[in-house]
Length: 319
Image (cartoon, rainbow, N blue to C red; front, side):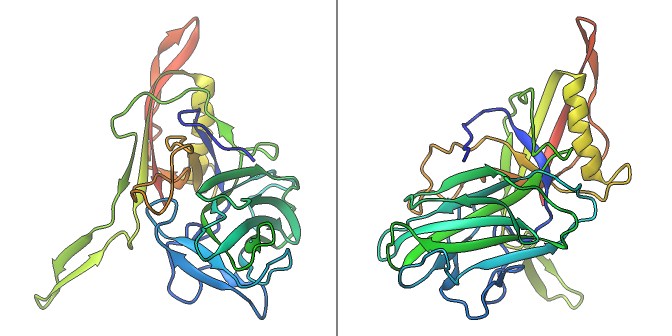
C-alpha cells in the first residue's frame, strides 16, 4: 500500500460520488449516508475529535475479540453512475488509526470498495498507534451491469486483542480518464506560491432579520474548506491538455455531467506526527474538489525548441 512523500508530483483523478467521506455531517446515531450492514449490529459508532484534518473522524469500537465476521460494519451505497465505463480501474484511499492504546485493544480497521458484491479494493491498518495514510489500487474492475457501488467500514481485532477501537477518516474512491487509468500524475510541479494550500476556517456570520432581531449562523456548516492554488509557468502542451481534460469534465462541458475531482496535492508530510496531543491544523492528504476557474486559465507563453509552452494558474476548492 503506497504512501506519498512530501513534495512529490501531485496526482489528480475523478471522485466516485459518495457522500460524507470525512464524516462532517452527523445528525443521527450514525454519520449521514452511512448505515448498518447487519440487522443486529454490535459495537459503538461515534464521532471523534480531532480527525486526521480539522474535522471529526469516525470511531468504531467493539467488545470482545472481533474476527473477520465482525457485525459492526457500516456501508455507504450509491447507484451505479451512468457515466462510468465498464471495466474501469480505481484507487481506494483512507486515513486510518488502528491502535488507540489506553483501555482499548489494538484494532484492525478495514475499508472495502465494492461493485455490486465484487470487492474492488481493500485498505487496512495493522494496529499502528498513529494515523496512517493508505492508498491501494483495485484488483477487480467496476462492472456497470451492477446496480450499486459501495464502501464498507469494519473494525476487527489486531493480534486477537479484546475490545478494539480504531479511527476512520478522509475516504476516497477515484478513477482516471480511461478505463486503464486510476489517476494522472502531474509531469510538472506548480511554481512556488505563498498560499499554496490554506483552509477557509468556519466562522459565524451575524445579521439582522426582517424585524430587526439579530441572528447568526456558520456559513461553512462547522467545517473548513480547503483551497489549493497551483501556478504553472512555461509548461508543455501535453501537460496542459491533460489538465484541460479534467477541467472540462469537472465543469460539465462537452456532454459530461460535472464530476468532482480528487487532488493529491502532496503538501502534507506523512512522516510528521498526527496524534491527538498535537495541534489541530492538519492538512488532509487529498481533497475532493472543483476547479474554481470558469474560463480555461492557460495561455501561450512562447515556444521552446519548436514546441509551444503555456502558463496559467489552477485553483482547486474543496466541495
